Length: 133
Image (cartoon, rainbow, N blue to C red; front, side, top):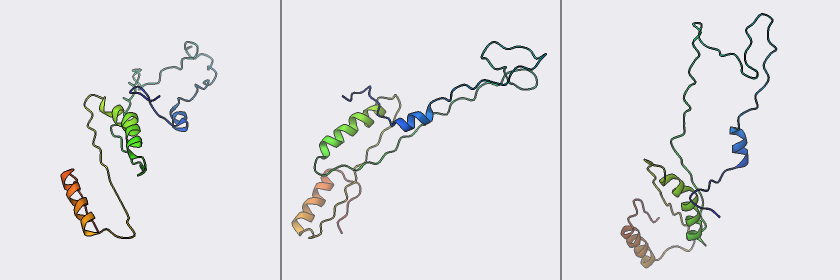
């Protein structure tokens, strides 16, 4: 079941972002100050002040293109809305834009009545781009 808390991910992507296991460091040098077990000595500038960690840069944009079956578009669009659009629109301040592109080939050609109906419907529905060639 997919709900508003679900996240769909690919296992290979997750593995690529998993932190690497901590490797044991070199053995301590005689006369060097000891550090607590498993904690490497802090490396910092020559004045002894440790460097602050660089802030993590978070991604700020999602873009995706998906092919939708003309046989059952409502079902597939519903799944996309639940799995992607709702995940993005629930983030405060997010701006989500959806674009539906239709590309149809009619080998037998379109008659005048069908062309007129398509253009009128596209105008009524607010299509930004439309053409019949």
